Length: 193
Image (cartoon, rainbow, N blue to C red; front, side):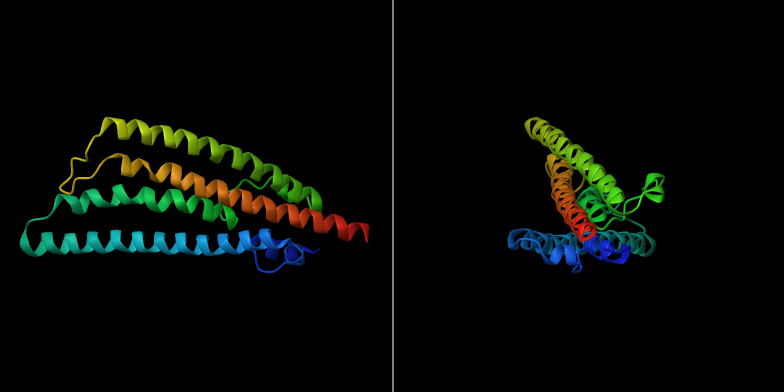
């Protein structure tokens, strides 16, 4: 398998390694393709709303001389709902910032094995963050604290983005790990042939 085929397998666009996968794994990859697209669109909508609200807030302040506090409070309150779910999408699409020391020295199955080790470590870390985030959400729910903004809501809603985002990241890590394993297995079968 050449490097272009391996990259297609990592991005999920029909690599020979992925075409021979069992039906359930292929369905899981398709589900995650749809989920990643939905999360990306959610991030686009959130960012667009933040920009729109800030522009309208500035226009209102400029024309009327008065503004609303919630306009300034909104961006930091909704950004976690964009950032944390996108962690997994970026990881799945191999768009995270990386330090490429070993990947420049390794090729073929060794590079794929290195990627699998990195993804396995990421999977373990994201699962740990899911549990830590769930504990934090439970703590803030017990406090029953409300936000101090014009629009009141329970504070734990803000912290809920942390375990949700890392649960999605764990799912996408597992998905990427399955893809890398399929590439590694196909490269091994090709080297034997």
